[in-house]
Length: 127
Image (cartoon, rainbow, N blue to C red; front, side, top):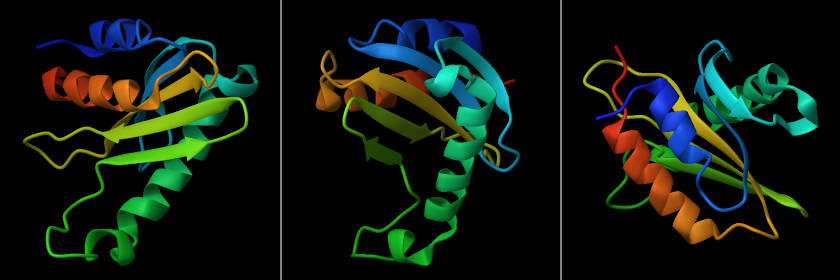
């Protein structure tokens, strides 16, 4: 089990990591951030990512599609030079938090980064 600071520090060890943040998607507020923020601003990136997360999470097309449908787990946005990964944090209470990771596309391995985010959020303790 790890707290917010430990989780973010470990996220920065993922190859290609430029920045990471824990974001509340209902408010768009950053609960913690490390590294660089896209465009140099963690708060603006968190607000933008939260808007995207809200759209995906609240859209029934993503949660009702298919036999094994359930809540959205990850969002992946690819850009020419970067990846933006959002992993929703499952908790025992009604959580509205996701771990956001900004990666340099030239240095990152997308599949490995997603695997690591899943492990990090499984061990994250929010108090």
